[in-house]
Image 1 (cartoon, rainbow, N blue to C red):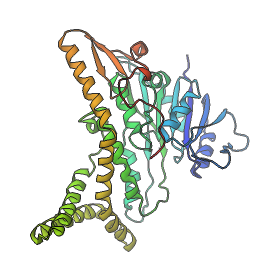
Image 2 (cartoon, one colour):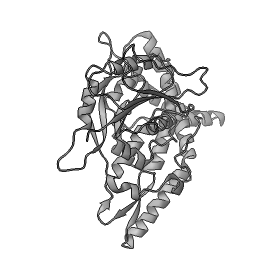
Image 3 (spheres, helix red, strand yellow):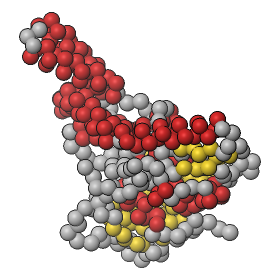
Image 4 (cartoon, rainbow, N blue to C red):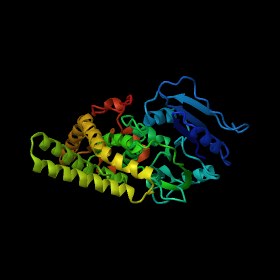
Length: 392
């Protein structure tokens, strides 16, 4: 039996969507079952118009609304609107090169003779960078997608995997970590994820000089990942470490300098200022060294390197406070699991902060039998179930 695939594209109506749609409908080969475009604008003044190139509407195009709840919720609305065996997620700012669709079918048909079939397939991401100068900090940030694991810029999952896991965790309100969370939960229940041969181009879109400060909100999502998946989640997700430890030290030094200055202690003030200057300088140099040396970029790096540490720490602390209950719930489940294992009976395993899966002596259930063991969201003991949330 030939597998089928739905293509799901969450969007906030950026101009890049039109470019993606044009590149999608210029593909040749076997067609997807449907294309689902999810309008995730908060308060759209008019309906989203998705018009395939003239004469190319060979596949049904559905436009559904998700109410501006973020990409995780939008993708859930999208995959639930289809019925194909596979769901291919694309971001609205990628471009599909010729041959992408044929390569997708090839990736989804690859299997292992001695193991379970793949439950997820990631496409490769290529970010074009300028050839006549060094890339800026923002361009390097986008280029990091080339090495990102399980990024939903181009990621396909079997529908049964999404159904068993409940899809994306909608507690992630931004396009950050929601894809890594789903991949970790899938791998925890034995789903095999592979990297395919297909690739997409991800152009670097224009951004404000303050974009690096705005992106520090992702530290809240890092706090949620730690609460759900526990220590070591970065290693399992193959995610880079980041600089939160340096930011915390730099911010603490600045706070100490201010406190000592208030209490009229010159020596303490000087030490605190020295720590703050050293941390800020090291961070700025780390960001400036691989980039262009023009006045605009250097000015942006110096200014934002002063702002980023306290902003990052603020968001991380806010996230730790926000998700403290989730962390405690995970610890309770692990204690229950340990107790049942020590009793010699089948144990309840906390699967990446998600539904509880029955683990017997033979290990975790394989994917085809998971549906009978996974509890629904209403049965979760986590006080923060996978429900929709407005962005904060």
